[in-house]
Length: 267
Image 1 (cartoon, one colour):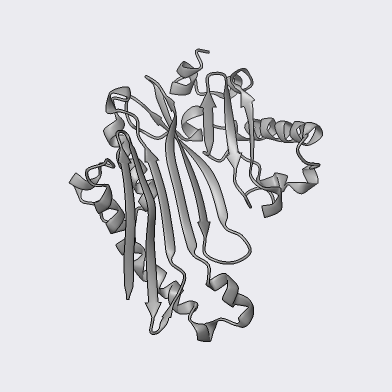
Image 2 (cartoon, rainbow, N blue to C red):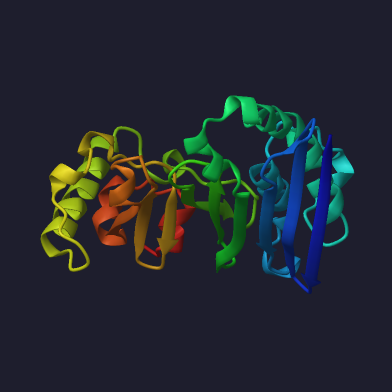
């Protein structure tokens, strides 16, 4: 048996679900509620000719591709936000209830009781960080806690061609066969970071450098490209997430000259 309570706050161009709590009950035991805090900020359609197609991809990324969306419900906006969220909760309800059963009293020892008494949470924030005639980039932040010593967080950047609506990947930006050269640029940036890091004493030994590759999780600026590596991707949880990048001029020898990024950088 499950229940869902929600509080919603809406403003023009912005959608925020303050708290959506899914509570699973197993017989006489109620396990932690699943608290969702979701904030979505969308630019006006006029800023991006292909934004309708982009919204469909954002919806799938936010709520998962396992949901069978109706063609007319693929618009993430203020009019059908509740419908999208209801479908998302319904699709995930079985998994949440199964997790609740695993946390029933007969499956928890005394050392786990304190953790089980806390609310689980799923926080999602989506916002545009770059809007232009050629490119539009969204930053997706998430934090998920389902018990244990700590939650898991991550930051992802989704960049789209504003004219076609297609999402950009590394292969759309760089020429084939340049992967090793790009990895070397990231390795150089990592070593520079370790040598000049003022916030903490880190060395290259704190990173699993064999996993430092271009990973599609990039953010473009007018003169650079930055790659974000979330926790556990190239280092342990205490080391945290890190961002390394290189300039457009450094990237120029490896770019696909037909790429929209080549045009964006005006090279």
